[in-house]
Length: 77
Image (cartoon, rainbow, N blue to C red; front, top):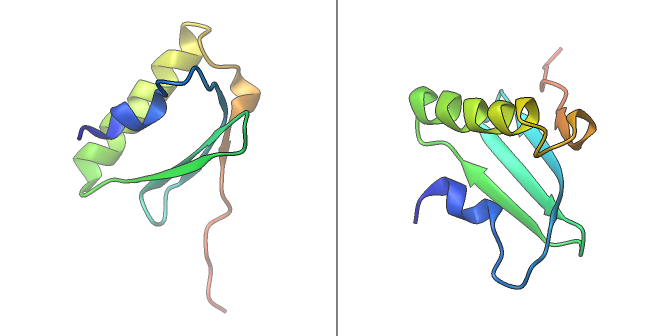
């Protein structure tokens, strides 16, 4: 399964939020019904490709900018 297939639902559920975690190269996708999926990029090229895909959706107006947030980096003190 391609990572982007996780963004679409056959039951008509809609995307409500995307949380991007740069540190772990993951994308947490939330639907309006509360369903959650995680996309884990296998490498940096895949991460960049998914990130660009999401940015393109924002640029085209398919996602609101407020729907895409970045998690705080994990920092050890």
